[in-house]
Image 1 (spheres, rainbow, N blue to C red):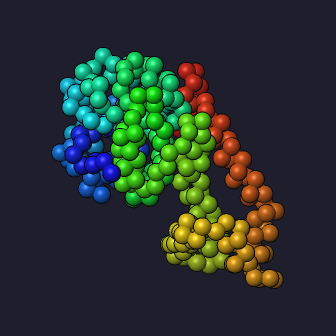
Image 2: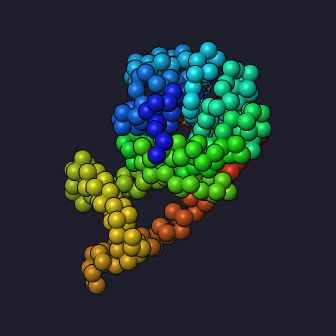
Image 3: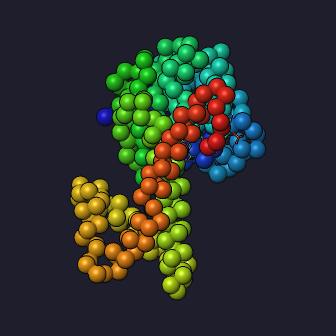
Amino acid sequence: MPKVDNHQFGVIGAGVMGQAVIRGLMRQQLVTVNNVWAAAKTEASCEKVRLELGIPCYTSYRDVVADVDVLLLCVKPNGIHSVLEKLKTYPLSPKTLIISIVAGATIEQMESTLGTKNPVIRAMTNTPCLVGQGMTAVCPGTHAKPEHLALAQKIFETVGVCMQLDEVHFDAVTGLSGSGPAYMYLIMEALADGGVRVGLPREAALQIVAQTLLGSATMVQQSGRHPASLRDDVTTPAGCTIGALLVMEDGKIRSTLARAVEEATLIAGELGKPKGKTKP
Ligand SMILES: NC(=O)c1ccc[n+]([C@@H]2O[C@H](COP(=O)([O-])OP(=O)(O)OC[C@H]3O[C@@H](n4cnc5c(N)ncnc54)[C@H](OP(=O)(O)O)[C@@H]3O)[C@@H](O)[C@H]2O)c1
């Protein structure tokens, strides 16, 4: 496996996601204050990053970009074009691996805007990177070699699970796992409300729901069984579970969740377009 800890990292866009990746890599001690810097648009954000993460953070990174082995682009979709336009006028090494986690920004758009032969990897990750449980998909660009892909995979495996996928699937991944934590939080909140409705203290209800979700996800991952089969194990004839499941089916939970992913995927596809919507 390629080594990660002897590379110099730059992270352009030290917001929610940029920080989640940096913090995740720091937790695993694969990135230290000595081999990563970040960039944000405003000095206020930079100051916060310096204080909270203890790493250098710049509003202008022209002078530090030359030394970077891996450049992570974590700006909003409407900011990626101007960042790439800037980068092509900066002293960027042709060897620097550029990894973008920007929703909707295609490899073709990034490579043509940059106009260099730098290896580019498109990635889609999510906020649980912060706790080492991220889900990331990666796809290599035209000039990315197997070692670049392996390095990107190593980076994201450090903060969770990483799979290689064709770029055609990236809007779907954005709609499923990029936005996915928000769906899970909403579901957890609703289930905890149910617990509160039947008398559980809020804190206990939330803890019970979180552990139940974690346990169920681990069952799916470790057993390799289909969720419907695992669900059958819990569903005693004439028991309470089937009663609850029927109420959920009455509320069209299955198609509601599936259509929500479809909607997010459609919006993700618009994000990269020049005059597309800029919803997160
Ligand atoms: N949030 C998620 O759960 C999630 C999940 C998957 C993928 N993504 C993708 O991750 C990307 C970032 O999302 P986010 O939620 O982390 O956004 P965010 O919190 O708004 O962070 C964006 C960061 O980019 C900085 N920035 C903007 N323009 C810049 C420039 N020209 N140069 C340097 N820094 C600049 C901002 O600085 P200021 O703070 O100074 O404005 C901010 O720190 C998006 O493209 C999104 O599609 C997000």
